[in-house]
Image 1 (cartoon, helix red, strand yellow):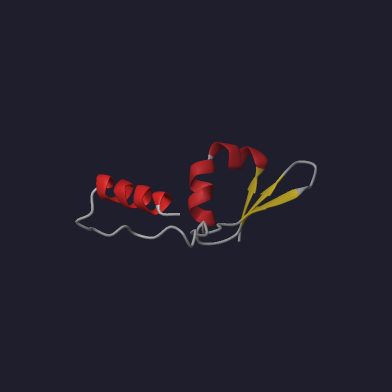
Image 2 (cartoon, one colour):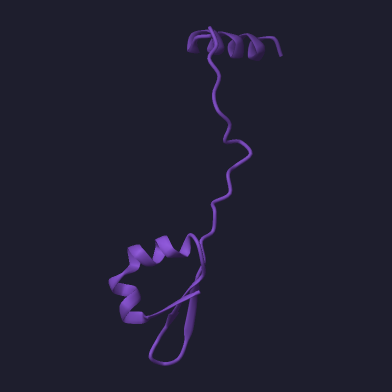
Length: 72
């Protein structure tokens, strides 16, 4: 765990964030308060799926939607 003063953290923020990818970083203020910086991987959405190549055009899709709507 790395500990930085508030002033050091401000000056070296980019480096601090890179270090936080590997280990916890603590920032200590003059008042004695401490803050922890921890890397958190962003969660991916279950809807974030790779696309697939098809031979279907946008017009084909719109025609299919119109057909379904007309046959209700």
